[in-house]
Structure formats: structure tokens, C-alpha cells
Amino acid sequence: MLLESFIDFINSTGFSHLSWQNVVMMAAGCVFIYLSVKKNYEPMLLLPIGFGIIIGNIPFIDGLGVNIYEEGSVFNILFESVHRNIFPPLIFLGIGAMTDFTALLSNPKTFLLGAAAQAGIFASLLCAYYLGFSIEESAAIGIIGGADGPTSIYMAMKLAPHLLGPIAMAAYSYMALVPVIQPPLMKLATSKEERLIRMKSGRTVKKIELIIFPIAGFIISALLAPASLPLIGMLFLGNLLKESGVTDRLAKTAANSIIDTSTIIIGVVVGASARGDLFLTWETIKVLLLGCFAFAFSTVGGVLFVKFINLFLKNEEKLNPLIGSAGVSAFPAAARVSQMVGREYDKHNHLLMHAMGANLAGQIASAVAAGILLSFF
Image (tube, rainbow, N blue to C red; front, top):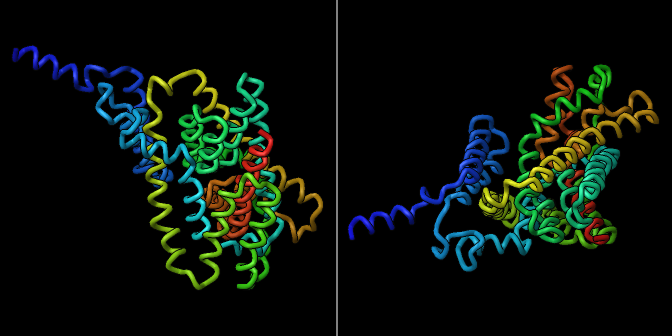
């Protein structure tokens, strides 16, 4: 009897159900945690995702009420809240409350860079469709090119819920790896002379402009792409809370408590959904590769677009092509990378504020692009 009880206990442990897929995914989770702690690669994203992967790959007996896919479990309730797209708009609210659009408004030309850097979305959409994904799945995969995690989750849940895990993992992973992926592409697409371009300071932006912008920006964006309203609306609401000067408490709550809580929950749930037996498939590998292509295409597209518009500008008005890569939505990492690469060639070249303008434009453009795709598909 004692021996049988011991055998039953062993059979009930996770060790007896551990598969090679679980081991591989838990190792991947540990790599994510290592990158966040040791390399400081977007720890706010990678650490909860990495630990979530470990949580989701602990094997167990069905019926314990702990499986993320088991109805009524704690993780399933959190998963359903992500499934219903509650958290991406809340994250956009927090981003808006943290954002200063001065850099964008001081140099309106950077608006165009945000749009140009979304090229990877549509290029990867076509590639995904060619590889056999449905048009809805292709649109959800393509949005990875915007390097915007919340928007990728929003699109995946709208168009391809079964691909949430790989799409979210790809989007957040490439966001975190911006300092690794972008610099070689930026150098490849520019000459040394172009990297040395110094840009003149933008104009002074008045307080009234900062208050009017989120209102006007929302109206124009929402009319252009109504399907983006939940994301764009919360982004500009958060910014208005900040810039109005009369709702500081609300702005601080959105920029701290709300966005931090939402980020933790999304990170853990996305990681936990990446169960080995479901995640390690050829379809997932294709999504990850397409996401990498989309992000690289967007980075190079932004740089090349700056080189194109420089053909029509006077020498003193030319833009440094390095800021074009910041047109992706990886905020503010992409802007910091533009500054970092520029400083490698000229230690006194200040590109950060200019790159921030392109980065903020990309934040808006990715949500609008998502709305346009949703309107079609």
C-alpha cells in the first residue's frame, strides 16, 4: 500500500510528465531572464515573459485547475482578459501619459518617418500569404513589423487568436533585441558621410500645441482608421491627461500603476501560453522568421526613406538617415539606438530628440496601420 501510494505520488509530479518540448521552452525562458538581467535587454518585457514561459511548461495532471487553457483556472481567467483585448489599450493609456510629443511637433518631417517604417508590415503580410497563411493570419503576422507588442496582441486576438503565442513572443522579443538587430542594418544602409550629418534643432513648441495635438491627432487618426480607436483613443487620452496640467494624479496612475500591472499580466500570460507541445511547430518557426523579416524590412525602410527625402532638401535641412530606423514603434529603445550608432561616428552629434520624433510617429502609425488592416480583413 505504501509503495503504491509512493508510485501514485511520483506519477502526479511534473517530473513524470516532463517532455523534451517542456525542457526546451523552459531553457528559452531562462535565456529571456538572462538577457533581461545580465544584458538589460528590455527587462520590463523579457523578465515576466521568460518566467511565464517556465510557468506554462511545468507539466501537471489535468483537473488541478492550474492550466492556462483549463477553464476557470486563475491563469485561464488572466488569459481570457488578454484574449478580450483589455490590456493593450491600458498599456497605450500609460504610454500616452509618459509621452512628450515635443520632439515630434518641433520637426513635423519626422511624421513621415513613422509611416515609412511600417513598410515591413505590408511586405511580411504578402510573404506570409505566399507561404500559405490565410489573409487574416498574414495581417496579424505582418503587424510584428511595427515592433509594437500591445498592437501585435490586439491584432492577433482580432484576426488569429490561435497564433497569439508566437506573434506576441516575436513582437516582444524583437522589441527587446532592438540594440542587437538594428545597428548592423543601419550601417549597411548608410554611408559614413550620411551618419555624420548633424541636424539643426527643431522649433520651440508652445504649451497650447501640446494640448491641442492629442485632441486633433485622435480625431484625424480615428476618422482615418476607426478600427484603431481603442488603441489610438487611449494613447491620446493618456497624453491629454499629462499635458492638460490639471489631471496629474490620473496621468501618474496611468504612467505607473496601470501600465506596470498590465505589462506584468500580459508578459506572464503570453509566456505561459507558449507551451512546448503547442509552440514548437513549423508554423511557429515561420511566424518567428516572418516577424524578424518584417522588423528588419521596417528598419531599413525607414532609413532608406530618409535618404530619399534628403534628395529634395537643402544641405542645412538634411536629416540624418540613422533616425529613420526609429520610425518603428519600439519606444524608446529604437530612438536610443539611433543616438548610440550616431555617437560611434561623432561623439558630439545629438540625434536623440530627432529620433524620438520619428519613434513617436511610429507609435501612432503602427496603431493606425493595425486599424486599416482590421478595416480590410
